[in-house]
Amino acid sequence: MINKTKGRLIFCITLVVMNVAFIWANSLMSQKMSSAFSQLIGRIISLFLPGEGAVASGTGHGILRKIAHVTEFATLSFLLSWLCRMLFEEKWKYFVLPIGVGVVIASIDELLQRLIPGRGPRVRDVGIDTIGLCLGACAMWGLTALIRRRKEKKNELH
Picture 1 (cartoon, rainbow, N blue to C red):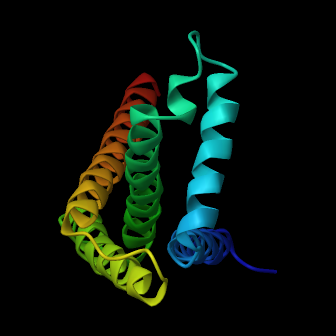
Picture 2 (tube, helix red, strand yellow):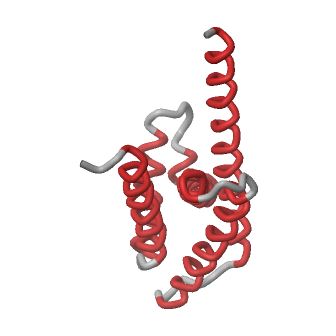
C-alpha cells in the first residue's frame, strides 16, 4: 500500500503533467482551431452572464483568451507550489521555484507556437502567464497560512 505522502506526491505530479499537457496542446492548435475553441468557450460562458454575449466575440474574445492564460498558469503555479511543499523544507522555494519553472514552461509554450502556421510567440503572453504564476503561488501561500492558523487554534483548544 502506498503511504499517504507518496500518494499525494504522485497525484500532484500527475496533475502538473496534465496541466502542462493541456497548456501545450492548446498552443499546438492551428489558429483557426484555437479561435473556434475560444469562441465556443465564450459562448458557453455567455450563457451564464447577462448581456448580449460580449465574451463570445469582439473585445471579449481577446479578454477571454488572456483570462485563460492567467487561469492555466495560476493553476500550474498552485500545483507546483504544492509539489514544492512536499519536496523541500525551505519556505522560499514554495514561491520562487513554481514561478521560475512556470516562466520556463510559458516560454516553451510560446516557442511551440512558432511551429504552427499563423501563430507565433509573444513576450506579452509570457508576461500575462507570469501574472497567473504569481497569483497561483500567492493562493497556495495564503491557503497554507490559513491551514496553519486553523491547526494552531485547534492545538490551543486542547
